[in-house]
Image 1 (cartoon, rainbow, N blue to C red):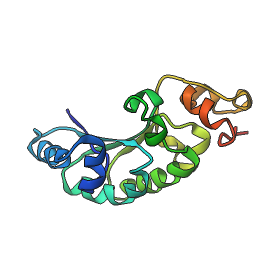
Image 2 (cartoon, rainbow, N blue to C red):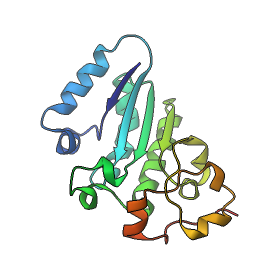
Image 3 (cartoon, rainbow, N blue to C red):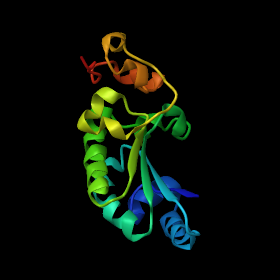
Image 4 (cartoon, rainbow, N blue to C red):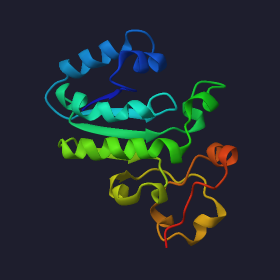
Length: 168
């Protein structure tokens, strides 16, 4: 299986995170991949969430066979970069969910990793299991608690539990 990280299909946005010329390299690697699964993973950042809607059609055209959207942990960002990289989930996830819906309509299997189930709405079935992280006290009464990834502990400390809405 070929697996690549693509932050955005716009070179300026992708290369901002990965370095100048990296999108061209990723695209070439995807094109050169052997027959078989070709997974593209997109970390959700403060600077790419608005560009997600353009990705499904382009990824399909480039030969991707699956797409994974991943919520960042503070430890995924460069040193001292978490405030600049990690977006508010209530702001970024609607863009990710819209893009995921578009991908599904185009026949591109899509999963979401690391998002709390209470913020996934009708696309909660796209949640890819991951290790549980931190939970707000209100999460104790959520019916989805047993299968929820929660949020990064640093995220919860930084933004608080206000975005989390336990499912009843």
